[in-house]
Length: 354
Image (cartoon, rainbow, N blue to C red):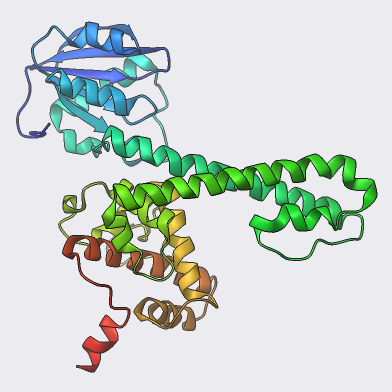
């Protein structure tokens, strides 16, 4: 629902979400507390409290339950504001807080000006369901990496080593190279690594099918060498609506790939990137950027952009180059999605030559 920040609603409800119960605080147009109390954090509990009342403004924080609750409240006709606590509070939380105080704080902020809460918009249930596939695959990849590192470390502690190989074939290769006295301890781990690898491959097949059948825009983004089905689908699902950004350059900030800003007078310090937004999307973009800058990457505008930044030298030059390429990659992917154009890897170079 559209948020009208200039209009003070007749009733504003702050909803501090908990896992089993949530606290509500109602404010009238004069900012007086009408009532407060606890309600169950269940679909039945939310509908019982909000279902039979006049439409009002409901303010809640983003969290585990906020996607389904915000959709339910919008379906009941209420103006829903989902606050971003990391942008509101930063790293510091208020010194005196509990559920009742948090609910009242949300209500007062939402009544005065919802924009102060840096409201976010949840993606649809279909996108959330498909993102679940990507997150489940990512958890398996992380688990496999930890198991492989454990096996390599255990073998190295005996004076032996397992030769370098890809994670996909590690279980088979390592089974032939681990010392005999470590087989009882590491054998079950190698079996687990093999099963996890098979599960990852099954997820990859599901993702390929999704891209082919439901997300042609993700297939379009794979024109960029280094952007695979996982990265392309994650970008499409996380952005959700490409027209939400007036400028493609804003996509880099959406994924937390822009430097923090803390300017005052003549002081303009160089700070780290914000790291806001989705961690998975940011990590996949950086991974694609590292491929573009790596030995298998081809000569293109993105690679040349990163090489120029890395050539400046300094501490963490390669990391800064990868982040810069990831930021530019997000901009290019958004532009390709909006314009439905064919990707030209030398567009900038040709433009400068012309």
